[in-house]
Length: 128
Image 1 (cartoon, helix red, strand yellow):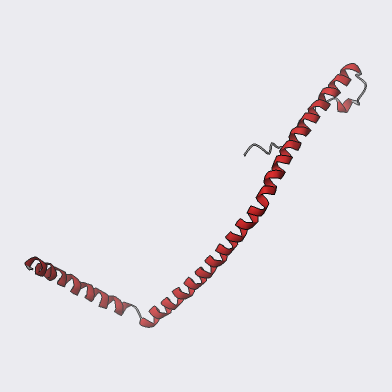
Image 2 (tube, rainbow, N blue to C red):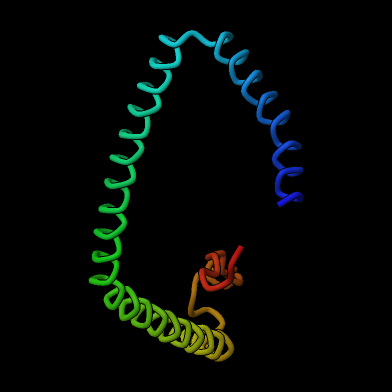
């Protein structure tokens, strides 16, 4: 019991100082301003909760929409990649055929079509 009483005696000055600081602090702040501040904080809290609810609903809706179209995106991406490889193969064959025709018949094409055409299309598969 002796130890407990000593701890209580040590805490008493701290408690008294704490109460004094609290009283001094209360005199610095007007109660009306404090109530106004609390009211403003509650208003802001309400708005933030409303915004959070709207954003949560929007996220759920977006997730649902994405789930509906993600299969289509994947399928269309595969189709486009397949079409690109098919077109690349076709243009490669056309270039080979044109070079063979030019080798056999040099006057088959006008002069401006003989120059090499540089492919300036961006490569969409490579990240920038």
